[in-house]
Length: 396
Ligand SMILES: Nc1nc2c(ncn2[C@@H]2O[C@H](COP(=O)(O)OP(=O)(O)OP(=O)(O)O)[C@@H](O)[C@H]2O)c(=O)[nH]1
Image 1 (cartoon, rainbow, N blue to C red):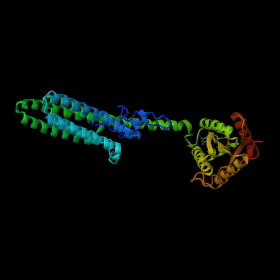
Image 2 (image 1 turned 60 degrees about the vertical axis):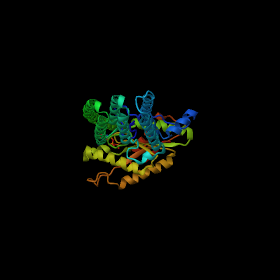
Image 3 (image 1 turned 90 degrees about the vertical axis):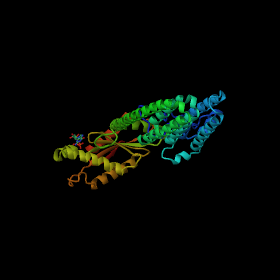
Image 4 (image 1 turned 30 degrees about the horizontal axis):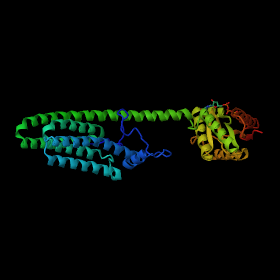
């Protein structure tokens, strides 16, 4: 019997077999004999394990078929030779599919679950069983319908069309053959054919509807994921500069304080405020002011180390955190930003526009409190402004 393809995109609405992740032999998980056996039979690779277990579950239907033919031939309803042939080839098919999946040969194919192959195989054996199990062949029509339902969930539109055409051609041939072998049952074959010819188009239409619904839901899911990502980014970032916002900076500060308690290494906290920013807005307009803020953020970030964290604290004020950095080294980083800012054109259309900033630094030590630390940095900044701006002051 065919199995669903775990590697194909699962639909959000239809629970896809891939979703439950059994996570075999997770690190730390005790390897009981059952777990070890499961790993041996089904593989330790999660996706492969899923493919194999789905395939084996579907193959259980074949096992029932083998049992049913055994029962029928035992009671003399069907001939022994054809029954044995059907059982042997079914078993060989199951073993072959398992071997291909377990050995990993399936990974070389576009569809590693081998859905189409398994579905075509199932259709072939249903057709063979239809001829061999002549007295109860009507019941096999249910099995054929089951195979077609598997196709709805696992095959692409093209593959589904192919499998349906294959079904019609094959079943028509075996029905003709059956009518030829048993002329007295020709009328029943006509009924079976009409039933099959009715069911197949319905299944095709249902499959197409399902595919459209799945595509629609997939698109919706992607849009929702995109929106969620945007919301998550907006929750921690400042929209204008793209820097972390004040709230997120506070969280990062808390984390840094915890780290500092463990390592004992001081870190530097710095408040930066652009000088006379109101004048820039008043002279060049709010748009130019925004450009200055954006470019300042870019230049500062480019100059800083990757581990340093710069955030927009509010308005034209920025907070900088320099982990594992004492205040004197922190001052050097600030001076590097100052130098870069002197040479960089902030607004390309306004080459004459330059901006300076004042900075207040404090060195954070174990036992310091966040609120007090920020106050100290603020006081140092106030001092820098009082001392004429365009300079850095360290809280002492
Ligand atoms: N363009 C723009 N301006 C902003 C933004 N946020 C705050 N501002 C402006 O920044 C200016 C800050 O002015 P002040 O607090 O007087 O400070 P300042 O002019 O920089 O003077 P000093 O800090 O004393 O050097 C105000 O005009 C605010 O409107 C923003 O997002 N975009």
